[in-house]
Image: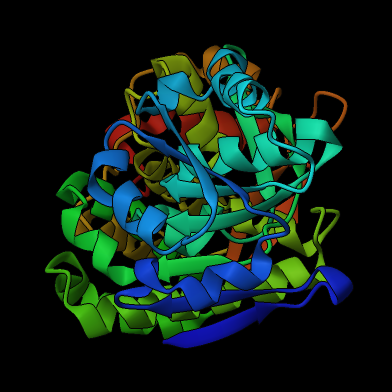
Amino acid sequence: MESLTVALGERSYPIHIGAGLLGRADLLLPHLRSRQVCIVTNTTVGPLYADRLRQALPDREVLVVELPDGEEHKTLDTLALVFDALLERNFSRSCTLVALGGGVVGDMTGFAAATYQRGVNFIQIPTTLLAQVDSSVGGKTGVNRPLGKNMVGAFYQPRCVVIDTDTLRTLPDRELKAGLAEVLKYGLINNAVFLDWLEANLSLLLQQEVAALTHSIRVSCAEKAAIVAADETETGQRALLNLGHTFGHAIETAMGYGSWLHGEAVAVGMVMAADLSWRLGLIPQAAARRVKRLVAAAGLPVVPPTLAVETYLRLMAKDKKAEQGKIRLILLQSLGSALVKADTDLAMLELTLAAGSNLTER
């Protein structure tokens, strides 16, 4: 096991990474304030791992809430299932919620913890690669609305994150590839050395070679932990973590939640961001093409869905990073360095949005 720390003063918390951690009671018990524990999972992950987790919580009153699986269920109505279960069992404000699942489960459990009786403890146990390297760390919680992704939520930090790499053995290939999008993101925005390593080791990651996967998770978590510690509520540097997300969220919203996996939409969003960065003269065309090749090599989409430019612009203007209706984008100034750009040339942006299969090409 390896451990990192998200340094947030009195609210600092550990990230534990290793194989076989799901049954480690010693990692969980110090973060429980009472006997009452609610495991929030879904209908896919619950049957696989909920019993094992329950066994790691001896002498506790354990409630398991299984939510329907899928991004389309990341709603306030689904969240009410958690609140109703807690209230029916008279769970107090000293209870602990445990998120056992992917990003949807983690985001919803965190939001439930932030709001149930105005705040209770919660623990993240992410079981998808995307959740392990990104959404479980940093305290972003929330749900989707028909007009925008993650537009209702809160910043609320977990007490710890336990990443059991064994859970990736049951992860479908499509979900694994979706997680690689977020891994690639860390190399693109802040770590050119890691990007080179990813380019050389993508085949091992796709084959789920344990050492390579563990390394990618550790580096990704370290990158995110450092950024979150410096900018918890995304007033500056943390926005860089959204490379490709403004494009990607527009795609998810337009296509219907669940049609494209989050990582798939982010992947093509990063190709679009690289294309726009090239068109604006921030990076050479060769760099933009390298991003496209990397994303394709990870088995991820590099061609966005066919949407009207006006649809993209309308949805991107509703993104959380937008200010007074103006679109703010995360772009590349080199491979390994990103910046926030609030005054993007609209004509260039429209060229990227219209490029379709010709991204990174004239």
